[in-house]
Amino acid sequence: MNSGNRLLWIVVGLLLTAAGVAGVLVNIGHLPGTDRSVPVISDGLIGRWRDWGGWAPTVVIAAGVVLALLGAALIRAELRRRGGSGLSTVVFPHRAEPAEAAGAGTLPLRDAAPPRPTRANRPSGGYIRVAGGTLRDALVRDLENDPRIRRAAVRLTGHPGTPRIRLLLDVPDGTEMTSVHEAVGAALARFRTTTHLDPLLDETIVRVA
Image (cartoon, rainbow, N blue to C red; front, side, top):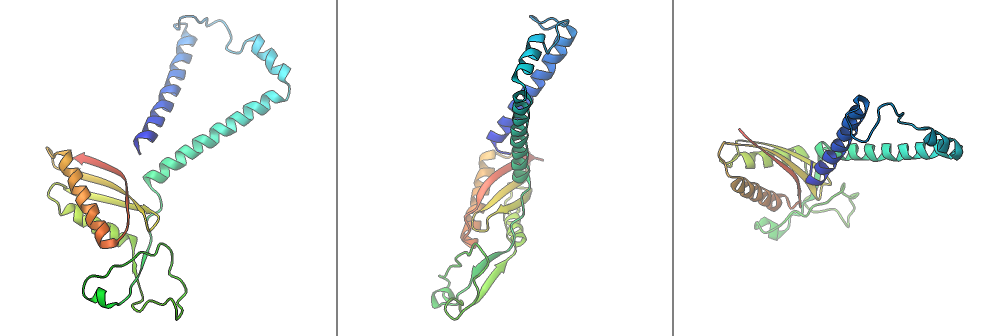
């Protein structure tokens, strides 16, 4: 959960809590400026509701639908941030060229499935398919090889070309957060170099164990 989404949930929670507390205080007569004997829905409000005719329920229903859709979108966004579909297979075209044989070649990423092979586009070395779980496990091992990180959990989601990364790190007590930041940055730099992907660090949770 990013800071903006967290702030939004806090605001929603505070508003609902304030409304509930205000209702209880009014009910027991402890809210200044209110009278528990006065009905919440006054005769004037009932009269205006009747004056609006069919528009009154229409407006209320429309407002309820809008609020429901906004709430569903917020919950869906939160669930996608926390989970999301895992990164599937990443496809690299492999070309056996002289420069690559000398160790200077690269593996440019293909974001989608490879095109139908033809004489014109068939790479000389075929295709390399790497499972998303393999990339995840490699990043986990790299992070856990750092003495500043006791345990690492990695979640890769999103588009193959620009995957989103969520990290859960357990670090020893007394570890400086700046050093953890440096360790994560170095691991992601190696990840970019070896995979030629451009990952986006979506969230990092650090637990002191």
